[in-house]
Image 1 (cartoon, one colour):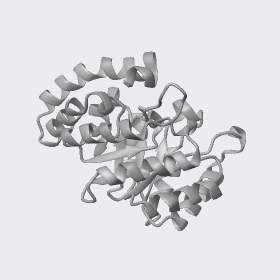
Image 2 (cartoon, helix red, strand yellow):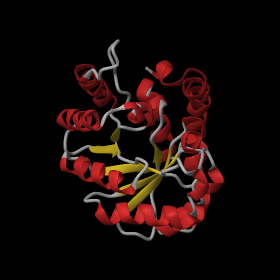
Image 3 (tube, one colour):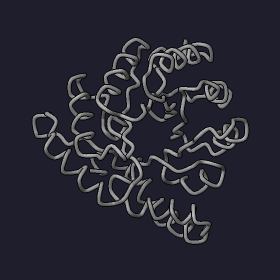
Image 4 (cartoon, helix red, strand yellow):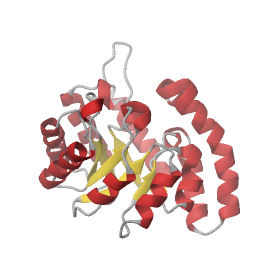
Length: 246
């Protein structure tokens, strides 16, 4: 979900709650606050907590609420993760640290995600988004992390269907979600269970229709919808950015 701001850069919580009410009408199965399209990197810690509270207030407890809690340090990620759990999120989405890129080795990431998962009261979803982090996660890392009982899935926004296939084939029913609408259909064909995609903020019913058609085995219909939404999704994420999404 996007984060509305006023002309001074302050968060519009009232507008955010109105947006949530509109999203609820679409029939989506889950909602993500503080994701990339929620501009979480620009938010103060207190603003993040208030947005989680606002989302949980509007979204029924029977529906899934995720929160992005990944920041650069393991300690700060754990702190935000615990606070998000206290405010009622069902799971957290944790992107990989990336500032010191040359030091971000397999073992560093293994230790980071393991520490977060051990400390988290709710399941941790790995978030692979190399377009922003500049450090793609390797399939062998995800496969190893999938063995942890509190690591509950992968959101892959790289569009790398090969990575998705490798994770699906080499894990035991480990949930994988596509994070890029232009590759939603092929990602599900490779074994992804669904997606968390930006275009769902602007056209939730279209994204949901693609998912439902694929889940029902109507691959022709799903392919038609994919061809319709792919150009729009690409324009939003690559050409116009979050401003265009809003």
